[in-house]
Amino acid sequence: MAYYTNVGPLPGPLLVSAGYFAIGVLQARQAYTPIGMALVAGQDENGLALWRLTIDTFELPGFWVVVDREFRPAPS
Image 1 (cartoon, rainbow, N blue to C red):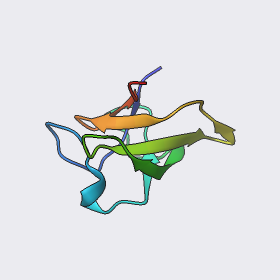
Image 2: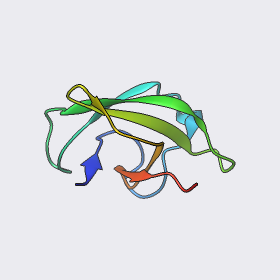
Image 3: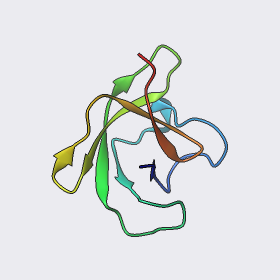
Image 4: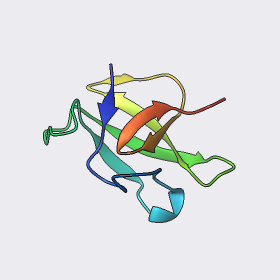
């Protein structure tokens, strides 16, 4: 399943320098009702914000990055 957000640049990655600490998680690009939330958990070596995702009450494993407003598993 894919997860999206409505913050950050349309093309490109969401960097930690953008200053977001918590953002909504959406189930589709055009959906406006959040299905969860993401909390910033640090940054990678390229300055991409690393996120922890919670959908309803379930925390997804691992870290995630946002590219093109889509959450993607962070490379290990």
